[in-house]
Image 1: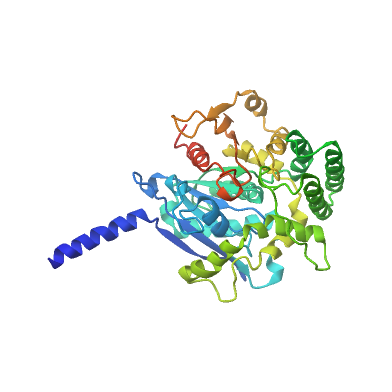
Image 2: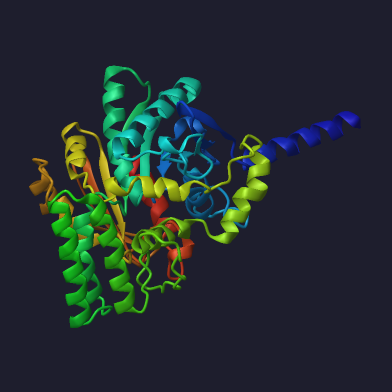
Length: 442
């Protein structure tokens, strides 16, 4: 009887283990006194082992928003912030590696305030150190197809990281099966985004002629600053442009135009108010009270390795403010280099996003020097549905050679996030897209 009870208990335990994804986490010191936190979930598919599915690195935006926190519990991880299973977790299609980057983001931290990244090249070099350590330590992932997916400013970082990783793989300094990158609602060309805000809002009846004139005027100021390489000033003016938009649209939500932003009291500190507003709007927004309590409470206890002096999100503002000079710089040239190197590049965008609206994405794509751009442009896009039974168009898709674009309908900036959706963003379509990008589905 004892043996039977033990056997039943073992079977139950094995079933429980198979239902819950295997996970690992840790720190990598990417520079002296600069520590990067990562959290890995092995794919959790009922019919396939993790070795039969790809590995996805997820990069959050901001800069300063946490992939291990926001991306994990608000978007694509196995559980939502109520600790309930997510129906559209990407673990059905891939293993996911969340990394809090740049250093200082989420549970990542620096011991010296001079060590925050100030530009994309530092962000990239830190990630190269991390990826080198990761693939050396987790040899089971060296041959599995590896993709970098990203969102918002994470897309700008992903482009730079993808190019450097491709070169490292070619040289043999990092051993992994790198297959491409996906840039979601990505801050690739800030100026093209800013210049499209007015026309986009006007076309959706969120600006009148007067409002359009005001937004156009401040967009021109930003363009002038960028043309003079005054990138810090351009970032400040970007904050001013967002204030002008909020005043004219009754506080439209920058992440989903069908929603409304709840105005926050501006900081009373004697410093650049536009910069404070930018941080509050685009990074602090990713540290909502409930998520903050989850990460600094139950999750911290579960992880057991977070130093006492580190608070989740405690250095996020420093991360954001240290990247101010880099913020408005475009990386269209890096996307061109990726395409020229035959790296697979996917762009995907939510229809209802304002901050990185689809019009702006299409504008920078037209600036690519990629020789196959004309052939890509001539392709007819194809309607996509979440299932064969569905009659509602969920997205449009176009691809040529190693470049693809997904226009995701009824989705905001966070394509897989219920928070910014009406009534929710397109989690099922996002999952289908992941399978298409990673060549599991056509």
